[in-house]
Each structure stands twice: as C-alpha cells, then as structure tokens.
Length: 191
Image (cartoon, rainbow, N blue to C red):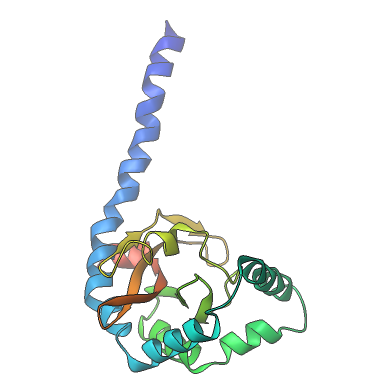
C-alpha cells in the first residue's frame, strides 16, 4: 500500500520542477524582443553574418564537420587558429561589449551563420557548429520572428542558473543567421 502511494506521488514530485522551469520563458521572450532584436539590427552584426554566408556558401557537410572537429580540438590545444580568428573579429568585440553592458544578466552571446557555424561570440563555445542543435534549428529554420527559450541549467563554471534564448537574425525580411544569448535566470526573474 505504501509503495502504491509513493509511486502515485512520484509523478507529482517530478512535475513541479518542470512547471517551475517554465516561469522564465515569458521574461526571456520579452527581453529577446525588446533588447536582443535591437542588438541584432546593428550593421556590424548584419555585415559579419552576410560576409560569412558568402564565404561558406559552398561548404559541404564534411567540411563543416571537419571545422567543428578542429574547433573542439583547439579548445584544449595551445594553438588556436580558428578560435583566434573568430574571437578576434569585429563582431566578437561587439558581442563582448554587449555582454559587459548586461552587467551580469548576459552570460554569453554567439552569432551563427546560415549553416549554424559561429560567426562571432563573447566567449569561446565548446563547438563551432550549432546547426545540429535546437538553438539554431528552432530559429533559423523557423523564420524571421522565431524565438526559442531553452530550459534552465546550472552553469558549472559560474555555478549560476542560466537559460539560453535564441532568435533569428534578419536582413531585409530574410533570415540570414541566428543568435543565442545566455541569461542569468535569477537576474532575469528580478527584472
């Protein structure tokens, strides 16, 4: 009898965190619509994404996979030519400035091209190709008004709870890329 009561109560125990997880979504969506969309209209963002789309127009999936493998290896290596190229560009400098202006709310920013490859970022990501992940698939592939808010996770490096919000980057009504921003959930909920 006790086992049946406990078994019946278990789904309720697991359901509570899931509903608590969703409380951040409206605030993250509102922040993305008000702030992030404006940031992504900047000519620095548009020019960088468009240039990389041209540069990578003929990239095969094999080459994308090779670049991603190179990036992952460079995160642990002393020589980092691909990472340094991306981290040293004008767009990355712009994104680092935006992260700093966030005063702790913004934990990371990275912009992706029309293949899901990093164009610029405020901090080094663990991989170069985001095209196989929801952050790119649920924005770039959806359309110009897409907003995707991911679940809350504990960031191991900062020990803070964060979520990622992603939107499509648009130029002249056409989707040219996507952006993902990490947000500190506690700060977000206090807004």
